Length: 262
Image (cartoon, rainbow, N blue to C red; front, side, top):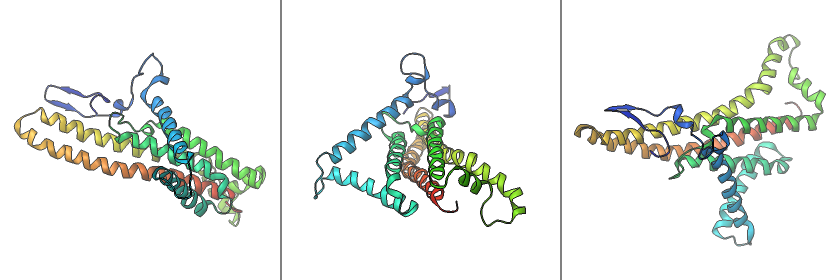
């Protein structure tokens, strides 16, 4: 991990990792498109494609372990995040939900993979892009389903609400649909990946620094490493959970856009 992040210490002083350690320099050249996060996104697309092509290449009634793993992920997204949330029109949205879930999960897990050790979604720009895509999808679905005028009217003037309430409710609904939803769905993913990985770096690099100190500090260092290992397992759970939450919220937004009253 030390090679992946700047480790700054002056004498006996330990300067803990900060947000600057997430801003990585270009691997080659002098532009922002050759940085590690960009290549990790490209790498994630490659390994996801290879895995699911291999899993489905020789599909059979009695699945192989690889086919079973691929089908299990797909069935989970289709049934739990598609069918149960969206309803009878769920199948046309399963490809997007499935791609979203697997893409986020893979890039999150990069944070605990040896030699990679960087969760791509800890860079907020990636989370924002996914939030904007989801924002566009559920609004497009709502407009196609209801028509643009009814869709906008239902957002501005929620059915069944006393007219005086619209003075307060309409601005809130506009902010919710146009700002809050895409912003919060992105920030939730980014913040969890950023905070979890920052905490992991503090314990691991802190433990390394303690090993370089006096005998008393050396005795404390195993506890720092132990916490780092425990946090790694906890971080894995958070990584899976955040992929689930982002996909779940996307399905909820799409289901809401398809509802007669949204």
